Structure formats: structure tokens, C-alpha cells
Image (tube, rainbow, N blue to C red):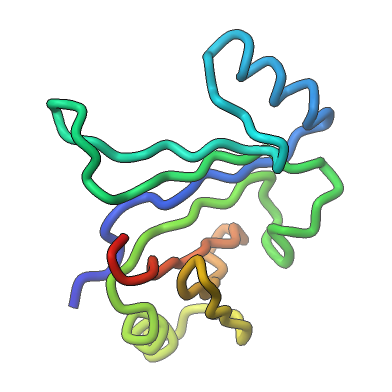
Length: 128
């Protein structure tokens, strides 16, 4: 069974999220949207879309999005079979959170790594 197949997103907190988003937009050209982040579409070496995306998002410092993790960031990893990966992690004694989510954006689950970082696992919807 494959486990992680790629990075689906990078999420981090900022003391002044609007100012940091503006900095990234102005100085690095990140196409920051009103929701607080950007979506990077995957492409091959010729620039042709390959069907995947990576989300980049800045959250306010007080955000509870990463709780119960203790870090100021969270990485979203793509997986092919969320339920199989979660089952394997539980069997291996990992700290898998009870909550899972199934939405139009795909299936999500979370695990806390040994350093206290919340890790998001994401099975994209079919076709992505």
C-alpha cells in the first residue's frame, strides 16, 4: 500500500496574517485569494496541467486549525486510500485523531507526529 504520494498543502500561522499574505503577493508573486491562500496547479515540464494542486495558506496566529498540534504550521499530505492509511497508522500505535471528514474536496484525517505536529492526510476526490 502506498502511503504519502505528495504534498497537498502547506498551512501556517502568522502574527499579522493579512500583512504576511500581502508581502508574499507583492514580493513573491503568490496569487493570494480572499480566503487567505493560493492554489498552485501541477504541470509537467512542458507546462501542461497534470491534475493535481497544492494549497498554500496563511492563518491568523490565534487560529485553532492546527489544534491539538503545537506547531505554527501543518502540512497536508496526499494519500491514495485514506482509510487504509488510517487503519495502518492506528495498528502501528500512532496518535490518529478520531475525527475524519468527507466533503466535496475529498476525504481528510489527522494524526499527531511524535513532536506534537498535527499532520493532515488527504485523499483527493476522484479525478484529482
